[in-house]
Image 1 (cartoon, chains in turn purple, brown, cyan, orange):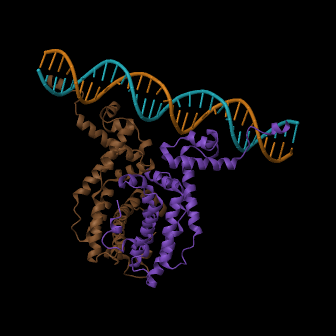
Image 2: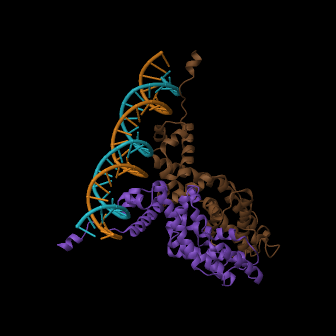
Image 3: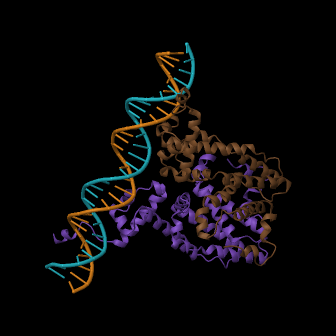
Length: 235
Length: 235
DNA sequence: ACAGTATTTATCCAACGGGTTAATTTCTCC
DNA sequence: GGAGAAATTAACCCGTTGGATAAATACTGT
């Protein structure tokens, strides 16, 4: 009886609540964009009352920015966890490509959030001093790796690290963020296991071939039977 | 007087009206996304009454799909206008990259519309038999060019034309569609003249170096002074 | 045990937004 | 020149949505 009374109507858990709200908001914003997101749905998904969103985080825009900052914080954190500087240059680049690819695969909401924010021309991101100060360690990593690669003769040419960083991100990002329309256009599922494996091989092959001047193993799958096979295996 | 009476309140112009509606809708959807777009604003921008949208095109979703189909129709049409098959292989690829880059630059709404549609997981595009039947001539063009390049020895390796098509699109698309957030992150304007020139040079260099095995002129800008210059010119 | 504060619930509402209804005006063709 | 069809306008409808208010409940320190 006294115990029954102890089974209270609700418990307090401010930190937990805040986290559940942000997680729910991340789902909602990535699934529906900023304008399409519904505050009520976020509350429901978080198992919270709508008032809680405003109490713990803020209005819709502040909620969105908090989610965005959290997303950048997470990827930067994982990036820092990698140590690629000391690998031999081609291997470092390969690992970088694989990390980028796999991170995007594991975190599709990150892609959606970036798309949404870019549709808004980074209006919100510009206001975030927090994100502006979160530099990716990869640019400096690429800079030193490329320099080493050129010096050792592994790489045939130097390249602007920012350009290379963007290109590596682009090859994965576009394929995944636009897989829905591309799958319709090409009439084949770009996200099935085989397609994904081929994509990773293609990207690694492309970038490493450009840097080293030698076509890389994975890139050559298509090479063997010269007339058709890989060349014709498409569409 | 009789003339004054002839200055009517409005004229009829069904085709013109339809075009103005679609143009206004394209602006609105690309600027605000599907959920963010406002039917009233489209009407205002088209200089029309809201009822006209429903009369000439349909409801918001149908309006959106019509815009999307128009966008695909336009790019396919321009693509067909190109004749790259007969150029020597490296030149054909270079022209393809330049066309893609310039088309995206000239038609930023196309990028926004694709982003929006992908956020919706191509829900609307899947319903469009029209778009599904609009195949890009570029895939076949790439297929034959790559084959010729391999045979002639210009290219060191065959490659899946769909993968290459996606990669070429990706390098331009991501840079432009994400330029807002990237510009904030890197603290520099990725859309100024110099940055755009460098980007095009980088993309051409990357892809052609990968295919030919030789670092291409434009890609080598960075090469000359081996220690710093291009490598350090960044960020 | 109780006062004060932090957290949560239960309602409410004014503005907005997509869509509709019905009346009005212009055009066409006989 | 007028009847019928096509195009356009004006006004309204009504569910949704972000946000606000106020009351209730749980926790904390004393």
